[in-house]
Structure formats: structure tokens, C-alpha cells
Amino acid sequence: MFASQVTSYTEAIRNGEMPCVESALKTMAIIENTRAVDAALRTYTEEMSALQLPTVDYKTLNDHHFTTLQMALHIFFNKAIMDENHEFQANLNVRITYYLL
Image (cartoon, rainbow, N blue to C red; front, side, top):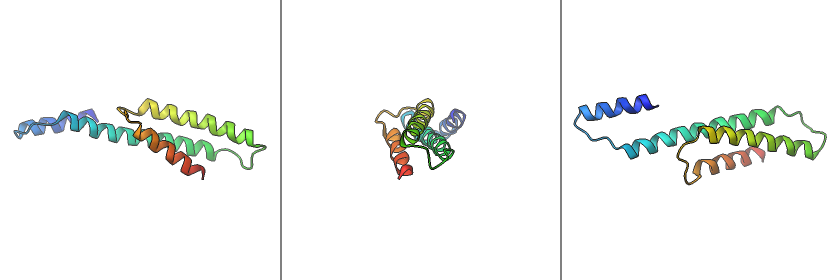
């Protein structure tokens, strides 16, 4: 990711242009945060799909959901960058809720 940014900056400077660092950082954050949401959601759906249904009781299902949700959030927070408005975290929460429906 950073290597491609350096390459595009170098090309822009060679062409007499002035690259915008802020725009590049925002673009990189969008790409990385999208990847973070996808990785977290993939983990959540894989772990929830591994649960044998029907479960013995509601508590088993709820405990598995909570543990799996914590795993997904851990993955998201380790990969996400500059999600200051929690936009991507909210997107992850919506997608997990949609998966549960």
C-alpha cells in the first residue's frame, strides 16, 4: 500500500504536479478500513456457520455470538486506521446485524 503511494507521488512530482498527502491518506484509510470490515465479517460468518444448529439452548447461541463478535471486532480494530467517525465500525455492525436476520 505504501509502496504504491510512493510510486504515485514520485510520478506526480516528475510530471510537475503537487500530490495531495491528505487525499492520499483518506484514500488509503478507505481501502484499509474496507479490508478490515471484510476480514472481520468473514471471521464472524465463518465462526457462526461452524455452530451446529439447532443448539441446545438460547444461552449457547448467545454465548457463541458474543465470543464470535468479540473476535470480529478484535480483527477490525487491529486492521482499521483513521476511522475517527466510526463509519466503518458502524458498517461492520450493520452487516453483522443483517447476517443475523
